Length: 83
Image (spheres, rainbow, N blue to C red):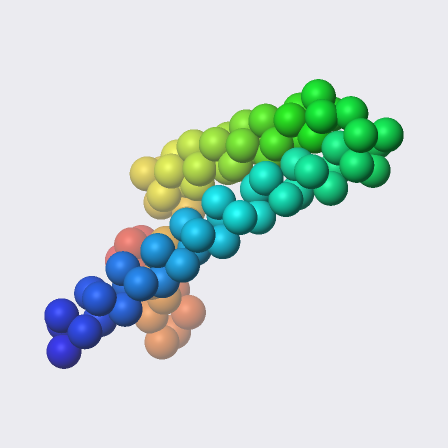
């Protein structure tokens, strides 16, 4: 059972990677086309998106270390990390 769950998780990660590799350049192209075929604008948008994603990852990591973002909640609604 665990092996099946592990394989399903790996398949989901692979599919997400494929979608990201296809969607990123497409989005950059759409933004560039919308701004008069200026590729620099599209690449700037792609860079800003990556920077915002990186900042969100660091903020989420900090919140988790401090104890604010526990995903485990008990039946009484209290976070399991705070018990």
